[in-house]
Length: 148
Image (cartoon, rainbow, N blue to C red; front, side, top):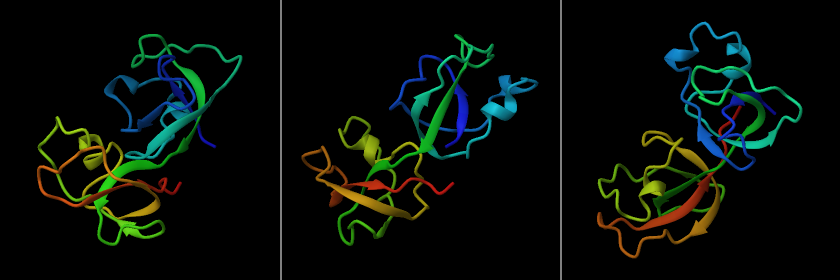
């Protein structure tokens, strides 16, 4: 289980984030090896906050940083319904300009890209929208966590 550093506001079990690599402010930080040890573009979930650790100075997080355990996690997403079943591979249907749609966060999920095929871990059913403005027949799924 990877250990990394996060700001205290993010350091709660269940919090999910996509690691985007080092920020410019990370340059010269003495904690770089403990902090910048995740895979870019992967969605992670905080599984535990290390007890008894100190809050470390951090140029990125205004309240400092604390040690947390993280694991790659599933990505909730919508895929074309045809051929979507647990265990199969699926791809996102493509970009969607309808940001007000209740399914938009699943059509363009953080941690997934349009040109990648993902293993479908489970089928969650119907997406939250009543009708797709792009007339797509979509199913809500969970993409399997990224391989470490």
